[in-house]
Length: 113
Image (cartoon, rainbow, N blue to C red; front, side, top):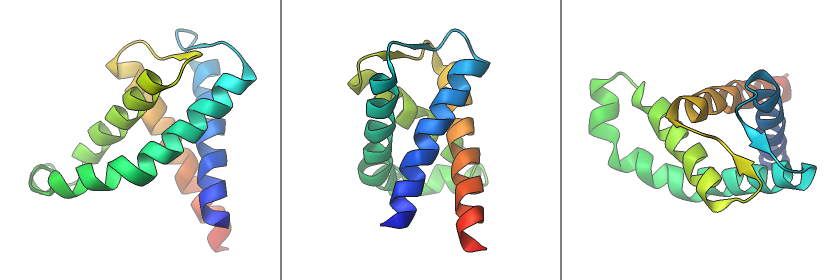
């Protein structure tokens, strides 16, 4: 349970940092950041594993780099579901997905020590 709370925190923090780094990302309120983080966390827990299983052949061909595209799709899906956060375009969603991935790796590395 603690690991999931850290992942949720990493999602929220990564979106906040990405919104500072990229002014094109529009966030209405702090509650919008929290709701987007929760939605992204749920999407990553429920939908992402299914898509990863289906995309095993292309992931093998691309040596796992296709998972970055899947992460981008999850950010775009969370953006579509949530209100108050606007991430215009695939490449900004890709950047947010990178921020989320790095934040999750950092938080996961901090808990292993």
